[in-house]
View 1 (cartoon, rainbow, N blue to C red):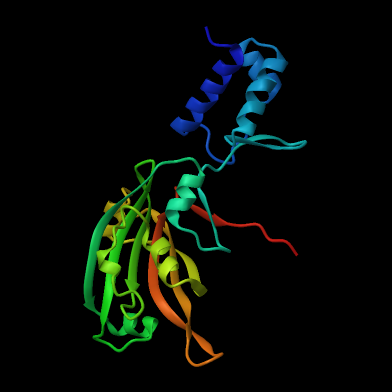
View 2: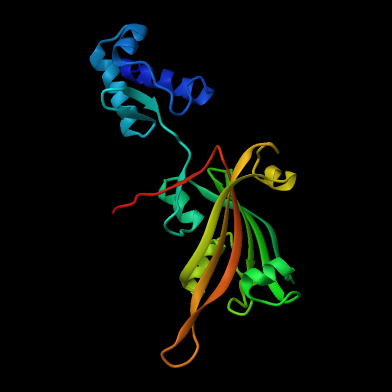
Length: 241
């Protein structure tokens, strides 16, 4: 027979997974749980404390205990491989490669990569999954000038972002974040409804190239548009001043 505090944890987890208690919603107090489950207040406190330690609940001193936001959070202040992010959370990473091709740059892509319209570019579309659930749709264009063997790489073994940073170390990046509704193809790849909002991160990365002795410049390596289901992902970070 399971300890009584485990039964309380199970009941709370069931309510959260079913959506009966949503992120940010206050959970019953120790006294309320003790009465509901006919246990001591100490037993109820242990159940809540363990769930706080596990990150399922969060406690606000003097106010109460609340359901945590379980969406994975990606830093806005650093660029990391999505695979590293997922594995650092102790979860399983996998991906699906939808497209890997050489194509001609449109006027917009040529401008973003510092090329001429019609120049060759590499184009990849990869869906990244966490515990088999899609969390990122990566639509990326790469300048062949610096990464000639891009199409030959096994992106099942390493992400495109990781590989690019190995052969053309990141020196600068600019990016923007906005909320969007995606087209049906992207929604289908992310296993979401067409009307569900996504976080769209547009990112251009640069590497430093040597021009002459003691001089260098930053050159565009890739332009990527990353879509994350809004209900599965968030962006954040910690700042010190």
